[in-house]
Amino acid sequence: MAVPSFHELRRPVLETAAEGEQSISKVVDLLADKLSISEEDRNELLPSGTQSRFSNRVHWAKSYILQAGLIRATRRGHFVITEAGRDALANGPNPITDDYLRTFESFREFVARSKSGSRSNSNEQAIADVSTEPSSGATPDEELTAAHKEIEANLANDLLDRVREASPDFFESLLIKLLMAMGYGGATGEVGRTLGRSGDRGVDGVIDQDPLGVDQIYVQAKRYAVDNQVGAGDVRDFFGALNLKRASKGIFVTTSRFTPEAQRTAADLGMRIVLIDGQQLGRLLIRYNVGCIPRQTLELKAIDESFFDTDD
Image (cartoon, rainbow, N blue to C red; front, side, top):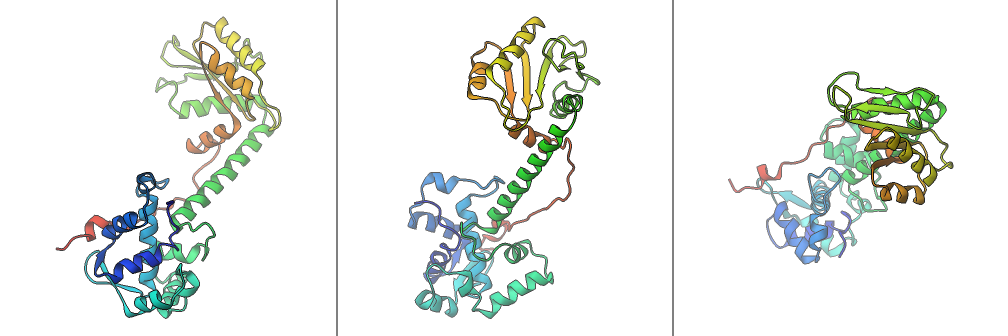
């Protein structure tokens, strides 16, 4: 089955605790087997790459029911069910919702404490800040990741709008700066340059890969509106320009999109031509901090389970 939401996992975690003292790492494996989670879903990682999605959801399920007093910690990394937890299994809803958890004073105090900032635990603040009943069943970690992606997508669109409003010379210069930031040209100094409005036979910029400029990458730039796609003819023209220069590498960048025919043409030509459309360009500008600057850095920490999951 697919990975359940962390709301749906609260009751299974509680049921496991009802069988006796448990450790969270053991519960992850037990529930994966009990719920017939496939190997693929067990191993699917969060975008951070630090934890599996299934393990993350089990941990968050445990965190919520712990704050409501349905389980209690016994020793390092271990917990047992409480009387409130047994009553929840007998009389509570399935799945165990946030609204049900709010019937417990300890959970209400926990959320209030988090919102007031009286404690700075990252898990607590995340619980206080995210929506109480996400329709997707995503954990706070997943909600934060989705929010980050949305922010970056909006930023990428804003960057592209600015680039389209700028002059062609600015666009060509920006691309050279971006490619240099990506490591093209190495550390040999002023190795990237635009070639001016003459177009230099269909090429807008060049990057020297060595100090003498023996190995060069040529750049073509098309500053188009969103609905003005780059066609196969433009790719063939760029291919011809590269042949005239006896070049073997070219990068074709546009603020719009390439038609399927243009993509097939680039793939079929016997030369290395890389196509970068507007969507990819926006992502690269953000990744390499070209045209944008970091506004805020968030450091999210998590429990070191290996530290606590021991009988010592």
